[in-house]
Image (cartoon, rainbow, N blue to C red; front, side, top):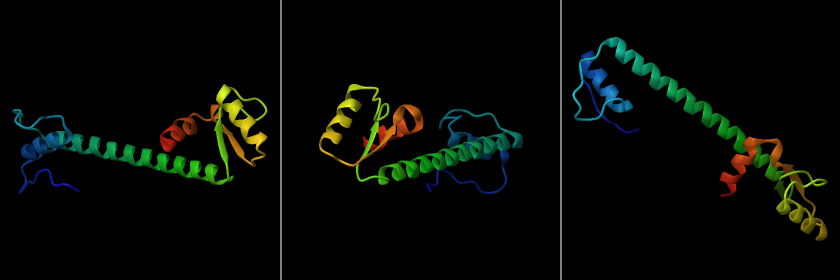
Amino acid sequence: MQVVDTSEGVDPPSLATKVARVVGSVKVGEPVAPASLGTVQELVKETESSEEQIQAQNGLEDALKRRLHKLIDSNLVMLFMKGTLEEPKCRFSKMAVKILKKHKVEFGSFDLLTDNEVLEEIHKYSN
């Protein structure tokens, strides 16, 4: 945690100004009209809401990462492809299936066209 500013005593306008600067609605050095306690409460609600959204996204990302790990660990070789083994939907998928079968490699597969979340995350995951 980083300390951005401090405040002593009870001075709602000063606190509102400091909070506004921290959340970025006012830049340092800009003149600020004194704010009311209502303004402070609104800024606090916005910040809490943003933190909840970030936590929810992190939870979703963690769940998706766990799901990817489970898929990857389900077979010694896992092919993430477009289409199915019986009907590959792109040249790369078709070639990968052909090579793996030719060399008698036991492998699992996942059709990326059935799940956009996995499609997007596997690109990030594998870089």
